[in-house]
Length: 332
Ligand code: TYM
Image (tube, rainbow, N blue to C red; front, side, top):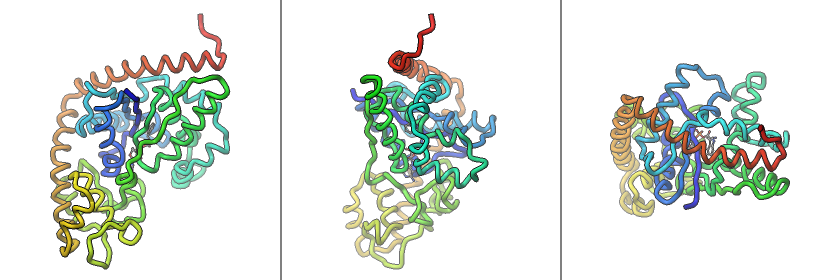
């Protein structure tokens, strides 16, 4: 079985719809066909300031949501990044292979550091993509299911894998991004020019999966469309409507063309009312299941402990080989 690896940051509150449609949904599907490793990246989260108590509870919350979304610990390896120390260790090695200019070109760093202010942005934030490289290479992943905003980091991973292999001999699998066109980028419901995100979206444009379903329905019904009336997919001319069609299509498994037919001659109101209902049907059980996992922290922690143990076996082997290839003297 080919291998996949991906990660998600523990964030306050809950995952948003973009996280789910862009990434987590694919994680659930791929556990059936792939040897799958998925993790909550707490070491990535601390590249910006975190409250210790909240970080701990957000990490559990993230794991609970992944299970609620359909990850099955019998079918995939689910773990917390900091439970596997090899991530930080290979991260250092990768830092020593990355050019300063190369790291400086990462657009996510530019965006995030601009938001933080140059003096507040940490060196950790700067080398964030390099830690992500280590995450992926440790597991010899063939594919990395992510949203479009992560593509550049996968490119960096490929470059560094090839560089290491070229310099020290075949060691790492060169991974490919696994990005589905339809859901690569889910947009803000109020401003379909920008991607949905915790930091950039207005509260009304951001669908948090754990919000009150009623509030979520309301956000969908008040989504921005355009002054035209035709329900047609056209990402350039009708970004708002197209975003709603992508979301609708993915959540219901209905082709966009079928939706266009279904809503022929009907107004935007009908589309939004129906999508609001679809959304409520999706988030309601998701909330319940997440709460069930949170109510049983012992089970949750033991799932994560088993996951970390499995992950470590793979990660340790890759790291040992990497150390050896580079000429680090083994400890006796
Ligand atoms: P993070 O936590 O920001 O996001 C998790 C996943 O959600 C996707 N995503 C979106 N997809 C479509 N539309 C959107 N509006 C949207 N917003 C977010 C992201 O592309 C991502 O796949 N650096 C990563 C975490 C990471 C990682 C890794 C990923 C760390 N190590 C190794 C893959 C492999 C991040 O911050 O994702």
